[in-house]
Length: 349
Figure 1 (tube, one colour):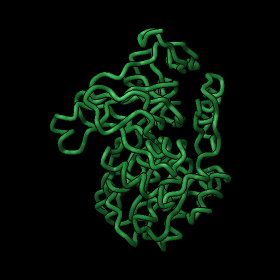
Figure 2 (tube, rainbow, N blue to C red; figure 1 turned 180 degrees about the vertical axis):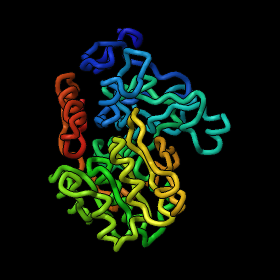
Figure 3 (cartoon, rainbow, N blue to C red; figure 1 turned 90 degrees about the horizontal axis):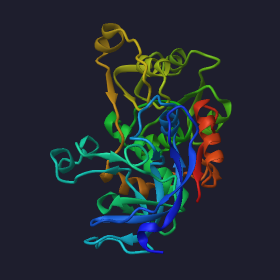
Figure 4 (cartoon, rainbow, N blue to C red; figure 1 turned 60 degrees about the vertical axis):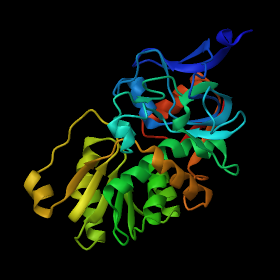
């Protein structure tokens, strides 16, 4: 059978608001400058649940979801010299032109030709995925594929958000959402020099896991998290707040938890607005509300190195693996939509 007729299995979003479907489709080809990767692990992200529900747009449909990908190089296209078949790799989930102003400035997420795998083009819920070689990074030999996949979104997104927050060693941090992103954020905030780290969630198991990483648990189902954070900081509030949930209520709480000159970084995805009192809650204390979009290719090597050195430990964050099966993946997405998932689920084809 020639290359054009080779088929592979993929789990695809066909219609927003409906379950993902199993498909047999042609295996993609590696063009000049591309790398074809055999997927060894693909993380299931909360954003994928938003795409499935239609609360965030993906497409044109149908499209194969999955933007947290690690695997092995199957084919290196013409002109690719950095990678060879058999190399272990991770994928930066943005395919960009590499030449525009934003790419040259290292802000490739704003490239006019940017395409995100698992959203704008086919992603990792498949046996194979193709990506420009400039968006491929080596995976250390000692690192499991599942860890490499999870680092490509949840951990890297938190790393980027903390850089946007300009966290100063010695500051306190509030992290709203203690799921997969939150547990990475706790460890990274500590690596950035944070002293007290408050983990806010409504799930006791998530909060227990956060405590194992040294966070101070705040259960928002039983107490006002803003009042509790203010109490524990002697009324000062925190220097940095990360909002990882994507709810108007938690976005507002993240801003209200800030002290003087504090910075709230919004990472969670929502289509709904939230209200804030400009003078009392922002201007009067010179607080900042910062948007954080994606992460950068340049941030992946330090994130991988932090994980290789176990400064960032994902062994307790990846809680389950599932096969490349539409039923299993839809079930995992159902749990994410209910905010009931504990840790990260990874697809192992």
